[in-house]
Image (tube, rainbow, N blue to C red; front, side, top):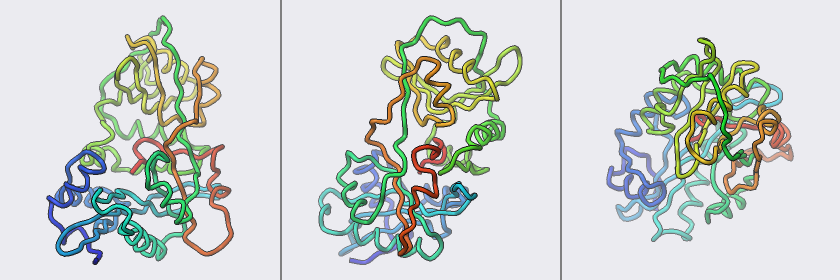
Length: 306
């Protein structure tokens, strides 16, 4: 088995892997478009492929996001796109790719983060590599009441305004909260998150923030909210008034808003399978959970997921 970069594999091999693991197609062109926009990706693409007898068996990606610690910003490592063909699972292929990825990250950074679900088989592998839970993304929900609101949501494309409000909302938080300047265009290339779901909120003719939302099943799903000071309640009430669904669900919830959200009658739950995990790449006893704030202040915005 050898480990190669994306330029040595076929689009068909890339797509077969991503269809097996992520339910979408993939190609060199897609990755190259991301490399051009995403400053977190190294120039060589940050993707490692395991190949044997001309057949691609698995892949592991890496990147270098910025993170906020209690002492200030640092560059960290990120593991992404961990995928193995079902026919090649439990043969140590992914283990070898992760070892190589960690060796590469170790040359530049001290910490490695990954985003996963503990419902996946791979969670036991991450544990063997020393990854620890640093964050369980919370959700909040409530039954929609019959509210009147004069808040309206407009389809306006203003990425810089959204980024500014977002950064203000996470100014007291740690973790993966740094929103890159090119985040909007990168989402268009990646195909996620959906920029068309972002609406700017107005009250009395003034902007009061924004919300990313769509309707799903019997509920309104709100994927991110950013409010100007003192206007979170207005936006939440406006969303309830806007929706014709039975329930409203908040995902990627900003922990700085927790008390206000609960005061608005939402149920808050952290009993979830989703996890953000962290590994110290250096051989020392320091605890990254303490440095990054762990449960009390750690957050990752929806555009910061990878």
